[in-house]
Length: 67
Image 1 (tube, rainbow, N blue to C red):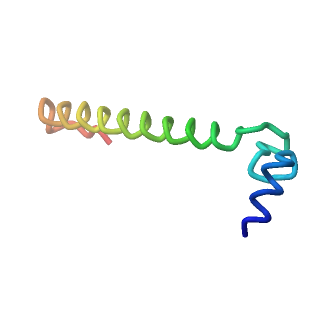
Image 2: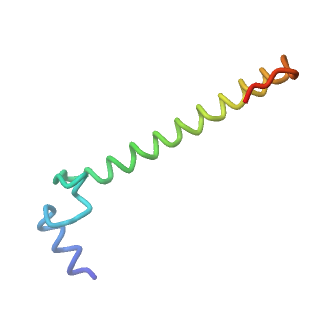
């Protein structure tokens, strides 16, 4: 297994993990993974905030349909 690691270390352009959308970008896959993780975290925070707002609105106006 070490042979492949050494090979990709010597020839990073041959490593499929260094391609993002078919374009060679050294470290690009790691950058995309970090950005995706950050976006998922932001989405979860926003979703939780929206759920709190909707819950508050339902408490204030329980007779209205807010779905």
